[in-house]
Image (cartoon, rainbow, N blue to C red):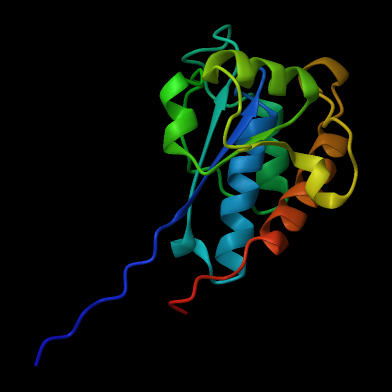
Amino acid sequence: MIIFATMTKKKKILFICLGNICRSPMAEAMMRHLAAEAGRSDEFEIASAAVSEEEWGNPIYPPAAEILRHHGIAYDGQRIARQMKASDYENYDMIIAMDEANIRGIQRIAGGDPEEKIHLLLDYAGEHRNVADPWYTRDFKTAYEDILKGCHALLATLPPSKSK
């Protein structure tokens, strides 16, 4: 008897912000958490990166890590900031930006968006606006709430895997 395993391709999502130390690693951790709560962890490959190289090699910013811990969300993704590479455009199905400037940076790195993979996070929540950068605003609570809203809405738009 031969049994064939059904292989389902994971949806690959890359979250992007300016430095990859606040918003995008928060989104990465929240999306992993929400997928796990929904029993859908095996459906996604989730990562984060930056459009700039100014924080390259730095860990998640402590207040960002603290607000995640406060809400019971583990940050077990990439531990150091990295800049998006042009090859990320081909390697990810969705590239989710925190603000309009990030979208321009992503398009510059990727050479455009011919496959329409680049989206603003809060567009999924029906709010075409930026997630303000808490590095500058010092408002990690609002950033957390906006990112959570966007990640909830994003997950709701992704149909569950057929292999479930």
